[in-house]
Image 1 (cartoon, rainbow over the protein chains, first blue to last red):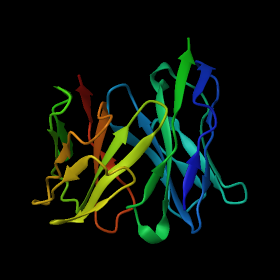
Image 2 (image 1 turned 180 degrees about the horizontal axis):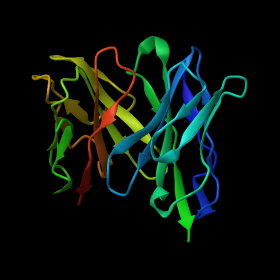
Image 3 (image 1 turned 90 degrees about the vertical axis):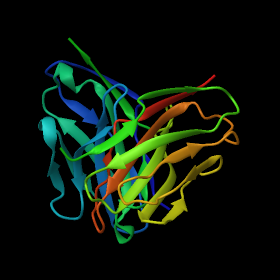
Image 4 (image 1 turned 90 degrees about the horizontal axis):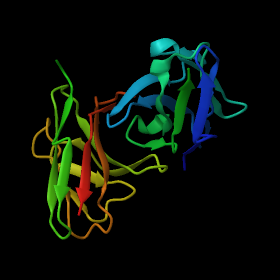
Length: 115
Length: 112
């Protein structure tokens, strides 16, 4: 069975500082991994995804994530935080042999940006 | 513009009433999904459908029902059997063989 753990339900960083949101996964087969962002009272927007190509994945809004199989991790980073990055972020995993029908989400990390 | 629409954005119902949430997509996607979101619990899958006239239960299907009579529509009914229906409901869709789910804006249901 697949699962996702997001360490830290709340993360605060200063504007201009590095953003690091942690995600560890468990999967019995090669995973597909996703990061989504959610602004208040809105749906989820795809930030980036890993589907077994390059291990360093670049997404929208300056975010990137690195797939590390040995650490079963897919942490999200951004070099310099902007006020508009304040939102909730979800990591998700699906098992590649199922395509996208079995998507399991982490419990989310709320990112606060300090002016 | 292609996308997923959910209506209404906010919905209030009295306890014991059934309520149907709408989800429509014009992306020509084959698969559609319903998730429930509660604070601190992430998203949990209620039902999904990979093809018209077929659907499968997700992890928390009890108290919910769906239909898939048209490719572009996947309505969710929250029945009176659902013990704690107040939540944010999200609909998603994906293409056949695709690797990504795309989400609608959500409906916030409050049962009074």
